[in-house]
Length: 327
Image (cartoon, rainbow, N blue to C red; front, side, top):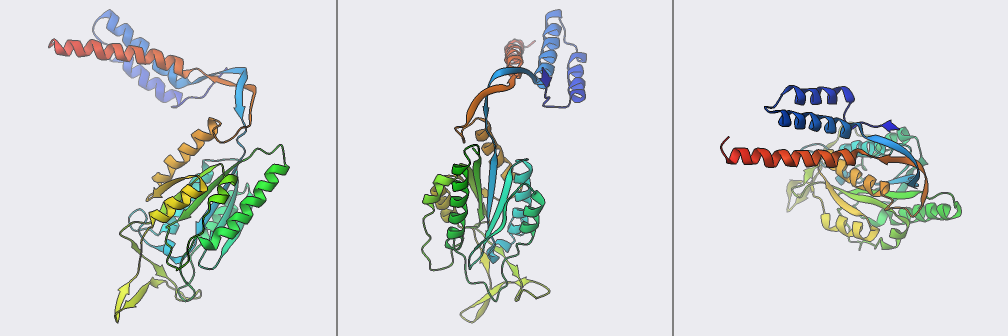
């Protein structure tokens, strides 16, 4: 038997002791108060009982980050006025921290092509260093954004990974994809369908960055330029400040084709719910058919939680009636 507390035990001891110290009037009322405190303490302990009849799932996870590295990702409308790419870097790090032991890879794409910056690795530092190097292209070379630029690279990488998975019969890894972009398509290209790639993906999310109001972009004229300048253009002889706006229509369409969810990311906290949802699906075995019966632990906290609920419900009714009688 083992325990895995939700809240550190010393803190819960203080909470439960506080509940008991605030003694209620009446013997039965005080007894209920003690029982509630004890049940709360037991729920928090989260007692785990060893069992050899627990269904275990293989949770060998591969995470592929696909990152838009065009200048629009430098727009300053993330979390208020931060650059989108700065938020992306932190989000990538947070995602990896929540999938310890996974293998990570990073593909970036710009207005020319897609590139595998980091092949699958367990070294998070390599991925973070690669993400930190993403700064868009200099103004002189930028020529527009299109998902088509990464299609072939993503297709080849997923199909190559899928073939390896099929050949290694012991490898029942879960392939997650996080496609990161603002969805802009300012070329005349018709965006290709990505639906043929869905068969190689078990889960993940298209993460959309940017706002409908848009953000300014500070870019370098040349790669050797010392200071970036606000991107401008001329319209009818008038100098205008360029704004990059999110295109959720393209992002949602891409998510549907890849068979994964879409989430609009405007601050770091938005990624947490995405990660929690994916982890819940993995833990429940929803993303893999590889389930075996073997050694594991059975949760018991819900038993105490049920008792706690009964006593709290009784208290709610009891004191509700007393208030109703004006006592």
